[in-house]
Amino acid sequence: QSQLVESGGGLVQPGRSLRLSCAASGFTFDYYAIGWFRQVPGKEREGVACISRSGSSTNYADSAKGRFTISRDNAKNTVYLQMNSLKPEDTAVYYCAAKDTIDIAPMLGGYSMDYWGKGTLVTVSS
Image (cartoon, rainbow, N blue to C red):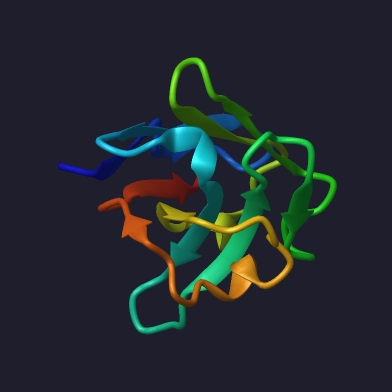
């Protein structure tokens, strides 16, 4: 059974940091590029960051540039999202998703992803 499981969400004060993890199982992890997405109820899903199969290429939404870092450890079948200088507008459910592709440029659109996790809630509030 192929699955992605997010963890690391929670309540954090503005300006603080949080690291999310996305653990994969049931498929050949290093064949897949991975993306992080977020969604606030009532709003459209937003692509945050994505990373290529090997980790050599990354892409970020403007809202994430300079504050968030995506990385992966293929030996652990895990992708991370380090989020620094968090703002209240970063509050959302964060999802990871996998796509069998070598071209990560269109991934932030979140279309035709092969696997999705169930999400982890991040709340940024004082």
